[in-house]
Amino acid sequence: MPSAPPLTYLNGFLLFATAFIAGGLNAVAGGGSFISFPTLIFTGVSPIAANATNNTALWVASLASAGAYRRDLDVDRRTMLILSIVSLVGGLLGSILLLYTSGDVFKKLIPYLLLLATVVFIFGESFKQWLQSFSRADTPKSPRLIYLVVAQLIVAIYGGFFGAGIGILMLASLTFFNIRNIHAMNALKTWLGTCINGIAIVPFIFAGIIAWHQTIIMAIGGALGGYFIANFARQIPSIIIRRFVSIVAISMTIYFFIRS
Image 1 (tube, rainbow, N blue to C red):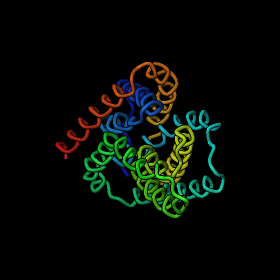
Image 2: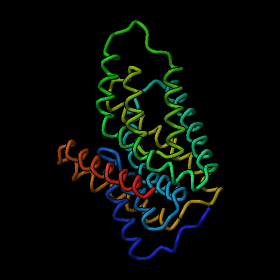
Image 3: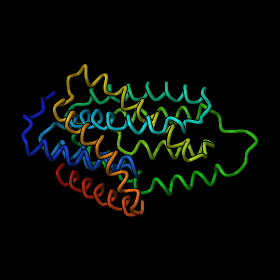
Image 4: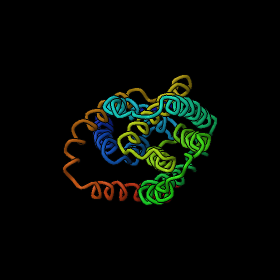
């Protein structure tokens, strides 16, 4: 794996600033990786190392969100334990899969991964509402846990491999499987996302592909952004924030398709 280039003051400032914005977006609407991941590549970090570095930096920033939601984790303990284990297993498998993917192949996959994440982000709310229309019907029996486990395993593998859009995918599946309290869903989604991204870091560390200087700067920026921007962004209609992220996501996707 190629090492990251020396961190210049200009690149350091750019990574800090974009991580600051990404941390704030993730705390409010999601989609921060559409800004932070391309920035790492723009500053010369190789694609796979950029993915691992971005995952590590934003995972550190997300720990604060997981702690803030801990009181809303009003979910059956058995279900939460099973989904946590599945998330850890899936995140580990996804990260190992990434390590066995050549740099050239992953570089070619980036536009399509960004396209998938962009589609999920833009249409995720509509998809969630469509699934919710099925879950509104009061059935005498809740859907079998095995279906939720399979869905979460797929999301976790994808999250360990790339990661953008996993929060929206989890919200959609949790809505479908009769977890209707939005605070409980957000709390569980945040916790499971922390499990996925956290376990994915372990193989990355052993493989030595994390650019630690970039990670530290972005983790600090992301944590500060999650705290300060979130308070400011709550005063802005969420639709405006989502449109901003959508424009960035579409722009980045088009750029990487042209670049490839």
